[in-house]
Length: 123
Image (cartoon, rainbow, N blue to C red; front, side):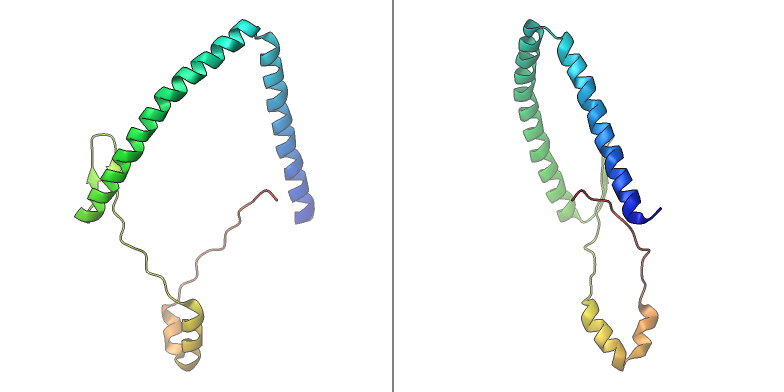
């Protein structure tokens, strides 16, 4: 089977998964009375406000922790979480170095090429 055929088959499986989820939700919705639906909506609204507050607290504290760890320059371990400090990544101008390597081929011994990878994305 060609890759294009496999991608089309995979897209079909994705569609089947989505259809199953929709059918499940339809059955759930069918057994819920309007009173239950209204109450569920109230609960969702109530907890959305609570979640917003907690999420804002989390975002603020994460930002403070990141800034503190960057300033300290070391990883810091708590009881349940670990803020891991990573040095900035070094990058090189590959095109420039490839041109330089033509005149200085000895530099190519320092070149490492990682393994290729594939990601599947929706079109």
